[in-house]
Structure formats: structure tokens, C-alpha cells
Image (cartoon, rainbow, N blue to C red; front, side, top):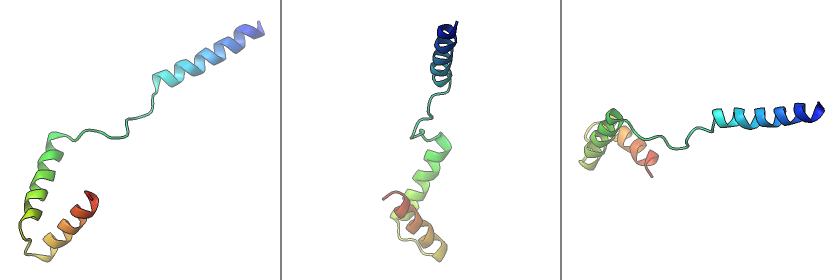
Length: 65
């Protein structure tokens, strides 16, 4: 009887971990996120004129470095 209890606990734990696997480390970008990234990238390729644009490009380069 104890063998069955131990076996069911082990199989239950293994089954529970199979139902809830670890989330993927890198999620693919959505179409909206890709378009935003492309827009910021194109803006930063040109010489930014405003202070806000310079700050945005600085953060963009730091994030994508």
C-alpha cells in the first residue's frame, strides 16, 4: 500500500511538472512591436534633432547593445 502511495506521489509530481513547463526565455516579437522597433531604428539612424529624440536613441542603443 505504501508502495502505491509513493509511486502515485512520484508520478503526480512528474505529471504536474509536465503540465506546467518553464516559460520560454525569449518570446518572439509581435507585428506591432516589430513595426515600433523598425520605426525607432530608422529615426535613430538619421541625426536626431530634439533632446527627447536623443534620449530615446541613447536608450535604444543601450537596450540593443
